[in-house]
Image (cartoon, rainbow, N blue to C red; front, side, top):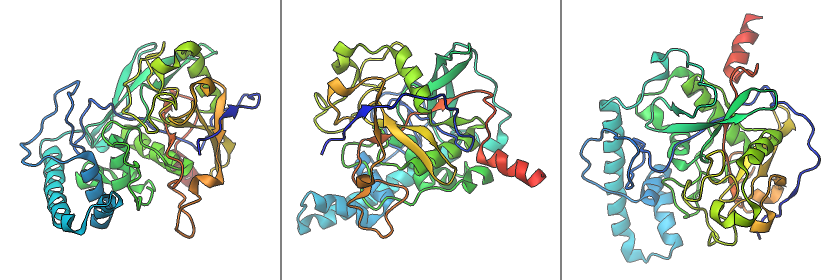
Length: 371
């Protein structure tokens, strides 16, 4: 059943809860030491020679474990005679993934956070790129004017699996490019199914994560970069949307929705950029935004609509609140607090607000220790 989007209640002025922090992510054209890319890259990345080539789904299956890898094949009714072939592919992808990780480590891709100084402030009004230490991923951030004359920055594209996989599977630890601070961030349990639903992996939006999962991802990227990235509030997202100025009669040019998506997500950045230079603000996946709550029980809604949303419902006011049915078919007991079994349209896009007076959980812990 397609999700139902409805207008938000009249917004009240809300600041971002001080316990939240959030993240951003790379473009499909950019490479990661943990994802095998076949498309062109915006900048050259050093790679050792790789004797194997694997599909994104094969690599994801390997990361999830051999049973999950075979399970994805059986889900497509592969006959028993094909098991040996699948095992061969698994071994090939394992060698491919290992050679990629070794290549990234030996060639020094990325800089460990402990070797970095404090990040410099972005130049007002300018686009900037945040590299994620320990990976070959980066986040392109675009400026958004605030009513008080200040500025915030928003991800040009939605968070994709390229960076989310590093977070989930602790690939930064395997490349020895992590730090005690980033290692200490609680990470979600690994999904027991192919969480990309077979839509696609490299360059596709990460999906089906809970709000708790998204917040922890933000915390992880913040500790790695030394900057504070956050999930936007609903009011912030609306401000971004208003300045994006997406024409209501040209939704098909800017968004993947039920009218043109073929009932699946698509690689980020393929639709036309809006007035801010952002892609997929409408459609593809709905974007987590905060409405309030507490550190123990955050509250949020999805904004922007997803690939199942009709074009006529996509606007700056439409939202979808959390629904318990998003995890109705999860067979686990208790049900997962990290992943949704029935909500393939949930995603994230993050913002960065410099000097907003809010602290990451690491900073709060340090302040608490000093008291």
